[in-house]
Structure formats: structure tokens, C-alpha cells
Length: 336
Image 1: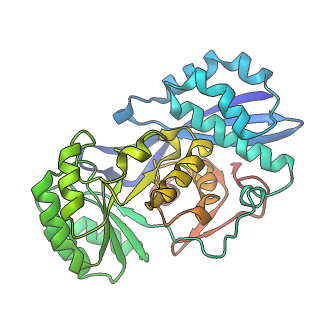
Image 2 (image 1 turned 60 degrees about the horizontal axis):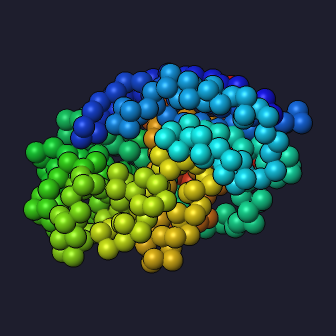
């Protein structure tokens, strides 16, 4: 197996702001694995919150290059199991390798990845489109610039209720709210009550992951469903979120790829929880991989390529929230 790394730094269409930071570019790392003259692509994202930078990702992968390149792919799951002891402290890097292995595995069979799994794509959920924190005037402008059936609204300001009220005046679309840990118990409960009649579907990660007792109170009293993000990083977190959240948002980059994500989906469903996958602002390589999980999901946030002014690749297309698969085997992504 041959390994190639491609670092990228892609510009956003607009400055991307959440409750804890703003950024104008998204550093990304694309991984290519080649075997039998067939190659697969995977991707992972730089993220300062988790102390992950592209140089660190490349360094950790290159440290194990010899072992990776000695591997002959049988199944992506076996590949993941063999690499996990090496990358258990860098699941972001493991994600890129796992996605590339899934793409390669499906291509070697001449099938799309969802076909390998025997899935029906006829009832896939629509993806939302994210409106980052800004002045309310700019948030309205972004909404009008991108008419969409579902919006994820980033909040964590002093005027969160007023923002949703104003945005509601300009669209009948479904709203999802993501506070990225910015609120406390009282604020979460107050906002949930105010948001429910304004067409908000759910609230994502309203409070810090460490505030377990606060989340118990919010879970018992919230007027809206609650979806875990920062509280649900790895497989072990699914059970911990039961009784605190109504559903989980799985980020492939954070959990280590498709292999653990599928186990997390199965575990959450057995617990009666809703399941979502989310974006870490990946380009079309990572987004194309997420697309093949859609038949498993209740909700999806895979708008990374829509938020970026540049892209690494061609692959799935997104039209009015609907995902259109590339007519190619594997995940469908090809580098530009």
C-alpha cells in the first residue's frame, strides 16, 4: 500500500464564527492510499479546540508510514483495528486513514460505498446550511444569499433570542440552533422555550460537556430536544450521553472515522437516541464519505464545501439540501 499526504488551506466564503472563535481559512489534510493501482481518499480537519494542526497530523501519520505501507487492505475494519493502537491519541489522523481505506475498499469492488453496505438511499435526510455568528444584519444577508430548507444557526451571544426572531421574519425554513457550549442551565431553558414557537427543531450542545449535572436538569425540563456534540467525541461517550441528550452528533474526524461512527450509530439507536453526523468544515473528500452514512441518519450537517470558497476535489453535489452522489465507485471523491 502506498501513502500520500496532501495538506490544504482553504478560504471560507465568509468569516466563520462560533461562540468561541472566528476563522477565515480552514486547514485540511487529505490522505491517499493506493493498492493494486487503485487509490482511495480520506480527509481530516485542523481544529485548535482539540489541539490538532495539519503539521501535527502529518507528523503522526509519517511516524507510522512504514507500518501503514506494509499493510494489505482486506477490510477497512481490520485496517482500523490494526492502526488504533498507534493512533489512539490522534483520532483525527486515524479518521483520514479510515476514510481512505473505505473509499479504496469499495473501489476495489467496483461499487459505491453505500452499495457495499447494502443501503437504500431513497429516504436520505437533507443537510442543513450553517449561518455563523455575526451581526444580525449580516446573518440575515447570509440567509438570503443562500436560500435553503434547513439552517443551522450558530449562537452564543447576548442577543440570541432576538437573532432567531429576526431570522424567522425572512424565511419559513427549519432552524437548528448550535450554542457550542456557550450557555448555562437557565439560559438554555429560557432559550428553548422562546425558540420552540419560532420553528427551531433542536438545540445542539447548549452547555459545556463537563456540566453533567446541569445537563441532567436541562434534559428533564427543556422545551426542545437536545443533541450532543462536544459531549460525544468517541464511542465511549454514547452511553454517557444517554439521559442527558435526546441524540448525538457524530463527527467522523473526532471519533476516528467511519468504522467507529457506524458502531456509535448502532449503539445510539439501541438506546432510542436520534443520530446526526456533523461537519468540521471538510472539503468534498470528507463530505463525500459522510454522504454514504445518510441512510443511517435522522439529521445531517454536511455543508463544509458550501461554506468554503475553495475545494480540494470533485465528488458529491448538494442541491437545496439534497445530496447527489457522484457516478463513481467508492465515496465518489477525486482530487482536482
